[in-house]
Image (cartoon, rainbow, N blue to C red; front, side, top):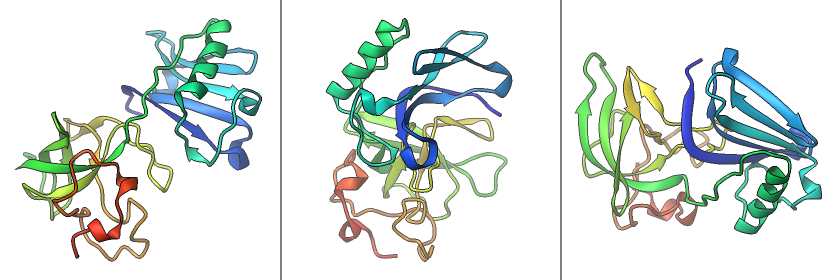
Length: 218
């Protein structure tokens, strides 16, 4: 398995599936580099070679904070402060706070074919007022000037897939451009390619702030 390292932490909670445990992660590790250490209710997951912390599993989290929902959960600064206080008291590194949305409206500024591929494209995609990233995309309908929804590193898709920064054919890709099916708004998979958003929606808008009225007709 390819290792994926990022500075973006995500938090996942599913009481029905795994019990009263919150899982924090900022990437993946090759199996032969996974190491753990446990103190009380906290298990630290780290790289056995670099010793970098890659995640935490915290048992009995409801004794510390109240969590609503399941899947990826967004913690308030106060909730994370309580968790970090517990981590600190047990000798672990703390987790930085970041509540930036990970599914955002984006504008494709440039599209180039990826050499050696018959369908992959290298895009330069604007994800915020002053932020342009490279995302590799395999959709046939991607084009310059198109407004889309970008899944940035740390995004958790409706099917549970976690999006990380990675590579396709050796080319770095900062997330992915998404289809309506991947976003969970087209369960019958009737729309082909990536979902196009009307260009009056500001770049950087969180996907959960828009609805089907903002979609370009297929």
